[in-house]
Image (cartoon, rainbow, N blue to C red; front, side, top):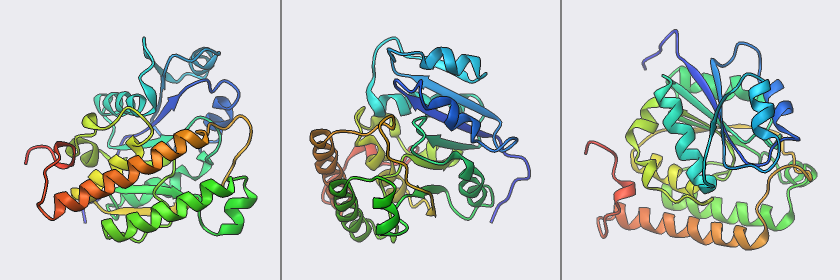
Length: 252
């Protein structure tokens, strides 16, 4: 198990209209725990960019809206270009508790895992008490059940917006080929499994409130079916029935 004493940790925030929650999310990051925070703004119509610059974040502004997945592609591209050894992706909507960054980063630093997820599903009671809509909880549990069986994992949640990746993961998987929509989140984890990376998780509190970003029922259905399709593609790929370029690690 390889361990490096000094590893550059960069937080990336895919942002869209996050003016009311950005500063709170940023202020909760433990002092000295990260080396840089990069915010990628996807053509917000509020003061997200101005607030990010005032806070001293590295700000990248899209000229055209690229969608949630397209935003993440820019996030990871710039994080790698800025020399990140470990990349933390957290939504700037205050739904996730950024005080827990240390706990998600350390297992990756120590080489125990290649990917760490902040799981909102420690218990059903906590998830629902934190404001997670019942239909989203049920869908989350169903999709996670299917994903665990098909992907050979044993995770409590695949659908969190609080994630940590090692540099090697982002340099190996062709995430640039993923969707620009929300299903990007599912595809990148399917890619990580296909490339035999180790995925761990740590429980994080649930925060659902008016200002926290959340996709509507229609978009949630589209995301769910997109996730199931990505899982099916993985199964067909592993059984050597079909080949999908986005599942083939780079340099293979």
